[in-house]
Image (cartoon, rainbow, N blue to C red):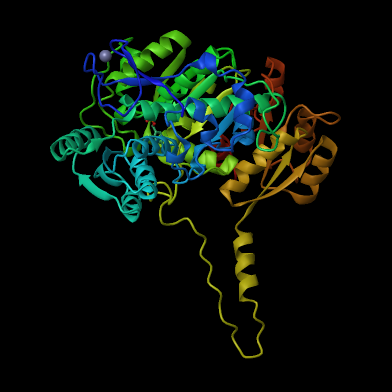
Length: 558
Ligand SMILES: *Cc1c(COP(=O)(O)O)cnc(C)c1O
Ligand SMILES: [Zn+2]
């Protein structure tokens, strides 16, 4: 049987854990943390490696005392994915995505539910009240079903109906409150008090923070492999020293994720398993950004946002309370940044991440990616710093405001005219699709850049793309195929981009093909002069977004 203590953040009182308590018996404050005897865990790294690939591999530092009470669906040990294409676009080679979409109910709240519900099971609790902006509701409903715990879920009415339906599918009682999330929380608390039912304390309770710290443990372990040049999804075991990233990025609502993750990294530091703490990149939607506003003004207390205007309900916590103070202190101590992004910026980022790296996220997660784009472009995140992004939740089903109704290409197959006629309706239809397509040639000797440009164009879906990888074959390509547009690199061995442009000027058949130049370096005055009037657009490698390129193309195409 494992042991641990509970510590009160307000008065520091510490007592051995026996059963979950709502408040500190010494002072009545609500914020409690679990504490362990870290010195006793000699050789913990080796111990962990013998456990399974889920978050319970860290059970020696988790608040469930006896394995038999663990409720698990294999949560945790989510993939740490290198963001290749996004990284190319941003000119940043060390971006890693912690893919929390792959939890049993599709968000990182599965960690919280697994641990909180196991704690309740161990304490013999059979009924629970919880308030949620959506994902906690789904995760708790699923885990409570397995644990045989009845759960009353309070959600604000703005939560997408698909999510509420899933909560109900798990047999939970769903109470939809017409009001903000903060009002919903208040009503849930009153209900729990009146009915004498256990109330989940969220970030103030100890279980939730312990759950989130497993993100830090996994990140350190997987990053060890990644930074040793191995793919953490393919490398075996933990042969590598654990590592902390320079940055941990997440969108915040109540702030549980970063608070728990930083507790995890500080325990790893204390055990000497990693050196240093990450900086925090934390993001909120502009329509509900109390923490961002307070931080910008240098305040340690946030002013509440009583009426959030963001459509991203997952993040609509208008009253951050004590959590903001904790985050403020962490940022003062370890560095970092609080930024807001608009809903529109988030939706754009959502599409970019899906199109570039095959990762479909929910709008709340897209806020993090929009924030990443900003911090990299502002130079706040330096190109040599390792960044880990909490890819917190899946878009499934895709919400209607992201992809409207008209996203398919509709095709009607005509029946053959006569009995002997050829059944070529399908082919004709396909040819018609093709005829509308514009042809774009890419001449680029760097295969990564070529791949990035092709990917951006492919995701747009209506271009025929031809590529050449050096100047001479590039020139042959455009002479042969007469594309509607040329995307051209300047620096290439042999015939370079400047020479190709000059040759094209002398050939009547090529002179009118619009050119967009993509360059790796700042141009000198003389080089700019050589290009003047001859090109339609100029983009700097690693510093343009997909939308910049597509805009230039739209303008340049005849
Ligand atoms: C809960 C949630 C967040 C915000 O997390 P906190 O750390 O609780 O502020 C972000 N994204 C998704 C998908 C979430 O479910
Ligand atoms: Zn106390």
